[in-house]
Image (cartoon, rainbow, N blue to C red; front, side, top):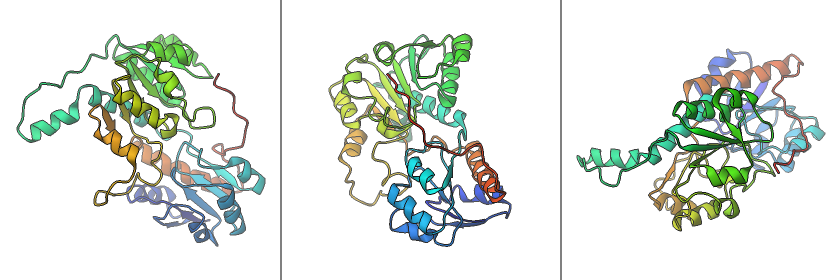
Length: 337
């Protein structure tokens, strides 16, 4: 099968080539999928898209006209795909359902610890031979209340890790996981109760119409003034403007995130020699109680191997006229409230 892989990153190509083992003809391009670059897919049976690629109505219709029958996503999230349109056009779409929940959850803990214990500032001082430890005070995680928004695969790993720290666990999800209740004494509560009680709120929700800007001014007003928000899920689950206002006005004490609401045209590229134009990101970077990483939570050897293996597996199934269990279908969402 001829496959065009959009938004190909240097770090992932060896994993994809190794998983492919010469079975499919893979063509890697660095350009992201857009209305202009869709024509690159002419003559290909399938394309592979990254989380930053847009698969809107117009682009899907173009891909259909160019002969594309299959789309395999190199991501868990699929909010960038109009599944309704794809389904109507007869284009099959599959994703990587869980490339490594451990990678994401462990990164969430890493940025939480780095922010809380001010490890970045400490390291910067030591590199300058400044061993002053004033203004580096954090707090113990032991006995703190951790609110986990979304207790699916990644949220479940987060619960297990934080239970190991001796934390009290609160969870919020439309589907409750009895194993988390039995094994880690996690208590399911409403999102309002969680925001009121949690010292740390860790987000592990998909982005959809129900979760877009879920964390907004109204919920932030309920939070403790010493609360820290961790986001390794999707940037737009948080209303960035509202969170900036809360940080500036000391309504919450910190924010650590690996995703950003307007990351699509920024992340995975080097803009260090250009004047920054994103005002909200400029404000976030200027705040001492904010830590941002550039969507690297998934960047482990295990996760990259799983992404590559699943991507090729999806293509294998389609080339043999089989359905892959990773296929996505349009469905009406259940309400969170």
